[in-house]
Amino acid sequence: MGHVEIWVLTMCVIFQSGYGFYLPGSYPHKCVVGDPLSVKVNSLTSIDTEMPFSYYSLPFCKPKEGVKDSAENLGELLMGDRIENSPYKFKMYVNESEIFLCQSKKLSADDFKLLKKRIDEMYQVNLILDNLPAIRYTKKEGFMLRWTGYPVGVKVQNVYYLFNHLKFKVLIHKYEETSVARVMGTGDAVEVMPTVTKEGSDMPGHMVVGFEVVPCSVVHDGTLVNKLKMYEKYQSPIKCDPNAVSMPIKEGEPIVFTYEVAFEESDIKWPSRWDAYLKMEGSKVHWFSILNSLLVITFLAGIVLVIFLRTVRRDLTRYEELDKESQVQMNEELSGWKLVVGDVFRAPSNPALLCILIGDGVQILGMAIVTILFAALGFMSPASRGTLITGMLFFYLILGIAAGYVAVRLWRTIGCGDHKGWISVAWKAACFFPVPLTLLGGYFGAKAHHIEYPVRTNQIPREIPAQKYPSWLLVLGAGTLPFGTLFIELFFIMSSIWMGRVYYVFGFLFIVLILLVVVCAEVSLVLTYMHLCVEDWKWWWKSFFASGSVAIYIFLYSINYLIFDLKSLSGPVSATLYLGYSLFMVLAVMLATGTVGFLSSFWFVHYLFASVKLD
Image 1 (cartoon, rainbow, N blue to C red):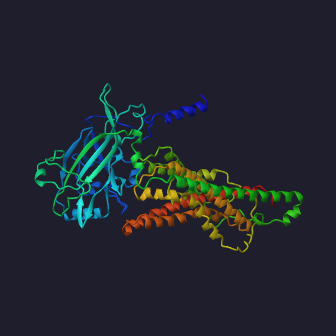
Image 2 (cartoon, rainbow, N blue to C red):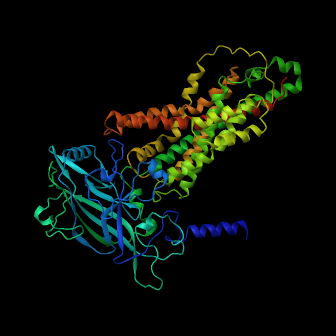
Image 3 (cartoon, rainbow, N blue to C red):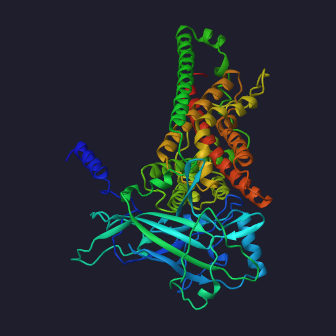
């Protein structure tokens, strides 16, 4: 079978009818009428503090079998997710109402104070059914807004009200048999419902395609709940009005919790059940704005590249002509970058630190490219909770080998092949962004042949002429062009991290990343060439910071986001947490973009001076 036939067959498998292909972590489960469905709870979250807390840190009802942690991956733990079982139980396609859950103990002074604090801090309760977070709809100025989870309570006229009655709506769709569904998936959903029915059973099955919740604050009659057990029917109609609150919390009084559930058949098919979450208010990507930004930046980068290539080619052509005419005349007309031939490869200051930064930058850049590529292909979808962070850590760990290899080989190149000190460089690279495999990569880098310079370095450094403008000013200003390629996408990334919104346009993000790499390389090349033309041979660190300076603008943008978009963020602890993570992020960005600039400039300088013959 030829390559064309294989490609066509692969595309047919992937793009067959809506339910024909499912990525790992997302596959349908057949449930017949009456099958048990269990709701899980995640950590309490707030955009006011950005600090998650366990659901059972508040006096909520606990399941009969006790609280049990669900199987979590490393990514979930790092994101602050703590998924546990809950007392909320459903039966497939069985509507139930006025279900008594429990009556809490009388609120102690500490519990009462904690509840008020969590309500003031706008904490949200996050429920999960069949891997779908509970979604809540509200109306504002004629528009329908979507939210994940529901608030713990609300404060009205200095009185605190708790949402103690939940009205659930489960959207279901008739089960559609597939041959792939029984093979792919994760173990998390297996605990929720059976995946395989008995052979020979013709009973109709359904799949969960939506999970909605309406929180209500309801006053219950204490005399009706004294003898009730969990899941028994509350002997009085409960009116759930989301626009009214009537259950104030008071110290020394218990809280009664109830719920109801209704099932509704929906036209939503299994592959489309996440669409409601991907259209969350505020997370709809401005497609035309991003496309316009990409086109503008691509156009500018193209102009810079064309001008740059024409200038260098003209310089080289002129030099070759002079070389053919007369060696003496050539030496008399040498100017610009050709004058620094004996100093251009002189070792920079702090060469070990430069090698460490470049090695870790290769590691971070490689991790970003591979992770975003896999996410763009759908292998790290929102349905697979925590896989994005887990994948990043895995790729970062493996690429520690590349970090050590690049750092040590660059160290040997700067030292003209000297092996001395390579273990120290590899160890420091591993400790800067800790990964033990960096030492293994350093070993391979020490064994690899160093890159030989095309020209010899003079023993006495050449004096750099006085410059009309500070060279570092150009270096710092160069970061504005790379920042222009990602500032629109940066808003949505920040909203996903700090506002709890779902980010899913990894295809666009991958394009932006590739474009960012190209622009960083071009900016660094142009500045390096400009410095060489004015006889400034100290290009090593400047080429790194020319593109790495984009981190400065990203950090300034982070401060702007904190002031204008995270207005509700309160307390010095939350602000310190935000700024700490922002600094960590911009450091990683600086290493990645600076590495792109340095490696491209190193290649250019090596190619440029290898193209001419100067004594």
